[in-house]
Image (cartoon, rainbow, N blue to C red; front, side, top):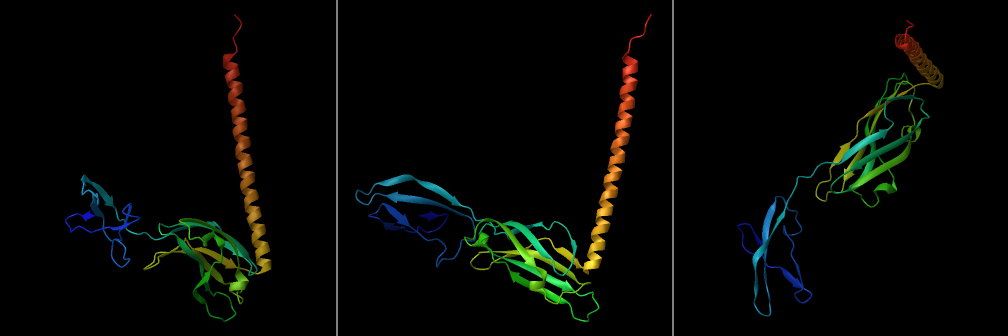
Length: 234
């Protein structure tokens, strides 16, 4: 093998000269730049040289951090401390996905006097990443009380999903978009749900009124067109 403008590097012949092996980079180190090279082959028995030598290129691209999308929940929530979240996320990476974590923090706005909880990482146990795939989908349940036993009404939980790749020298981690959960009492939650339903009913009624008006206008237009198209008697 002959890299561009460098000294020839011999292959290690195997299987009686029918196969050749060569490790680039030395000591298992990865390539850091694009490499162009040619291969010179010579028959060991008769000394025949094959020319012109075959030309090849190994293109080295910059590693990118994993990509992760938190698909569900798709918005901020209002919930009680007993909430169990159904979380779905997808991600991909060129090295492969090695692990996933829930990253959360708690802003204490209640009157219990306890301090806020700083950013904490909770490993996600899932078989989806056991083979370290290039693309992965996660689906799991997260109980707020299991992770935050002293969670109280008035607290606000911020959370995201983090994915880490399997890059051997320096793994990269990426966080999804952050979501927020406002913790309320059961009575406040009932009131919140009632207000949400009332708001949706109002929107539905407004849409129905718009559709009814549009239908009436259309009917009037059709009557006008029918009147214009009816032939008059002489």
